[in-house]
Image (cartoon, rainbow, N blue to C red; front, side, top):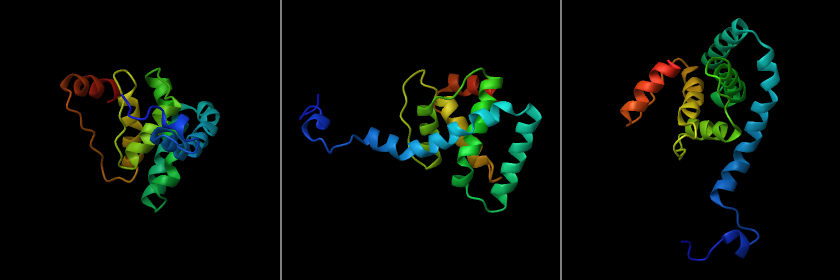
Length: 148
């Protein structure tokens, strides 16, 4: 139970940390969403070619932050096609948080694997390798088979 109740009711200028985070990530999520129709229109071969292009750009000095909207939009489309699961905006925000080195707290069934895929793909573009760690043996086996 909170000592002072809902701070937003007590102080109209107060914003919860969750709302602050959402406001900070919203422009990036809008940029990702703006690319959705473009990604849907691409063939599987075009998506693979875009992956190679993103890798080349990352290795030639384009920052991962600059590539993030395009990379996340590509992962969302790949996930929709291959897994039948489309990332929600809140999962995009979780992926951005992980990419920034933050912790994204999520409950059971909220799509932690989908979130991890976003950050893993983006950071793998640099060619330095990425490790995804979980303490749950069942999820580690399931997700390795499911995502590859």
